[in-house]
Amino acid sequence: MDRCIIIAEAGVNHNGSVALAKKMIDVAVEAGVDFVKFQTFKAEKLVSREAPKALYQDVNMPGKKGSQYEMLKRLELSEADHFELANYAKEHGIKFFCTAFDEDGLDFLEKLDIEIFKVPSGEITNLPYLKRIAQKGKPTILSTGMSTLGEIEAAISVLIENGLDREKLTVLHCNTEYPTPFIDVNLKAMDTIRHALKVNVGYSDHTMGIEVPIASVSLGASIIEKHFTLDRSMEGPDHIASLEPQELKAMVTAIRNLELALGGDGIKKPSPSELKNREIARKSIHLRRNLTRGHIITIDDIIMKRPGNGISPMDMDFVIGRKLSLDLAADSLLKYGHLID
Image 1 (tube, rainbow, N blue to C red):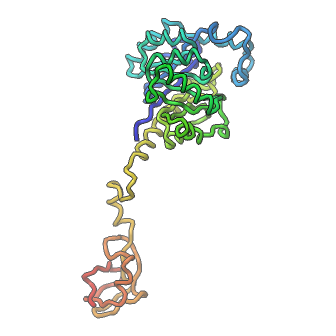
Image 2 (spheres, rainbow, N blue to C red):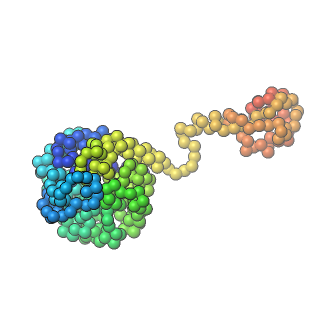
């Protein structure tokens, strides 16, 4: 199978600190992901000053009052911060990109020379945004949290009509709750999207743990996106639904191992690694007791024991009724040369 692209979503878990963001890049490098992703926004362009926080944001930030605007303002990265982080990622051998939340942000990201764009779930019904991102002509990810199949289809139509090659589009099944209850994951919807809309698919995960993204790879996800943090106990809206460093590394390892396991030719045959064990684990026909030359073998004379380098138990009916050509002791491995008609 093709290698799944793994995106470590730093998001806003840097808490507005470039120093923390660099530590997150280090963690992503150590985990072996393909991309590390941040978020590009100006709070005043993203939300009104009176917009309330989502319930999960209030729950994940107990005791932290204020509007969504005030929360996001503390989490902004400047343009200079973006260039610094992009250069840091490049120096450390990992691909860097960001999600932008408005057209100006998309235009800014072009200056960073990123190779992939992403439509976040909240922008799937933002017509001018969709048009602008399509015009970039680069590989594009469309995240689909909170969406119906019809809304996804409408967004895809806008993207294609405005210049995006369908082959450059990957649609991520997603649930926009942090953390997502397992019962709400509905992972089968990823396959529905693939077959109904004829697109490449992946999965953006907000569950606790690593089981669901791993399972999604077995179901054909070509891109996996997962939030991570330096410490889940840190203050911020997304930390609680994010993986800590060792968990991120464990997820990557599990996905890469799963890809190896799924990568066979589908033909059922002994593998090279197990062939050496076949004679050890299988059985052959042995004698239960001492027998003399000329004895006619009966079912009571034989027993099936390891190793399997003699006559197979599957040939028992051939053995029964034949004579021994020599004396043999109990527990002897019976061979075809020991038999005469």
